[in-house]
Length: 216
Image (cartoon, rainbow, N blue to C red; front, side, top):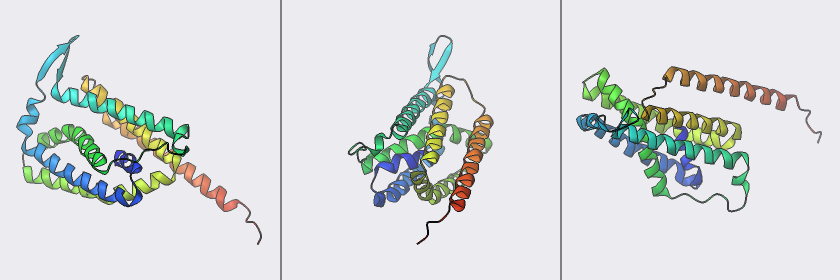
């Protein structure tokens, strides 16, 4: 959802929600296809080659590539935001509607590899997995637009969201090299950062309320 919010930021306001919904709708079909093609997906786990004792499969290469892309995207956006490059006239190029949809679909497929394999490991009941995927995509469709607007209005939240993307990119990159990072630590760090940001929001709100109003 954070990546979708950042990816659609370059589109005109009226095209953001349609792009989010179309991208997530295609991602739903993509995830369901992965579930029914899980036997093929499992073949992606078979080693292709070995480097310095580390075995690499197609799945590993996808995770490494996706991680590097997220690291690049997050780092570039953090630089543009902190250095106010977005404020310069003509600095932000308008994104392609089809390109944003394709980007959402590709990144979702990268995230889906591990989750689909985990779901198949939990149960062999395909309808249950498909229902769970449908619920997850529906939740993302519902919250994607409000989250995008919220991130756009609050630069500090945007930087925090980009930092999350950077963290997730590093996690995917390390997973590709067989260095599994315990998700609990990552989620705990994200929740802690959100809690600190919530305190900052509370402080700014109190400051605004205590400012003396200019008499008419």
